[in-house]
Image (cartoon, rainbow, N blue to C red; front, side, top):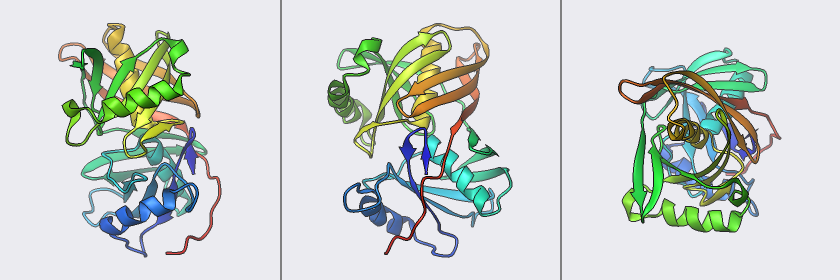
Length: 265
């Protein structure tokens, strides 16, 4: 499946019951674009043994590492679940966080259990914004004509992703350029993929909140349009001025099936 160009291999783990360790071992071979299927990550669907949500989404990066959350993967997961008979509105758990999915044909919305802030930070004398979206992100504003210099973005993204300030986990790096007060362009260097991807859902959220912060926008409810190479995502949120907190966060955008088949373990 793909969501705005972020592609994933999804499978039903309800009967296979592959462990977390099994999935970590499996991800690099499945995600390899030459010797495997090729993907930005693998996603397993299973029931919630803790009975806190309807389903559980297990996600692994192409290098087998874990991720706090994958927004575009979650939208694909939601559409995938509906094909197994899940209702169009349901809950699912990622680690200990409970998300709400709303599936409307190929248009999927994920409601995040998240209250976060935009923190200003200096990294090697460079001003960045640190925005936690249930996974680690920084946002770097750059001129729009630099968004196409992908070799430079990869180099800078790799440097910041591995910077000592973000040890031990590292961080995802988002390069943004504003188009208008409620729209922006985004390129994301993803940790675990170790390259630019066509889209990043949690990065789109971080970038929208960062763009709101940079404009010193007021309190209220907002909808931002985030243009990525793979399409367009919508980020909805509420900003509470008293404590500079973002809440009621929702990620919306397309998710589509590409193909299905058998993979031989």
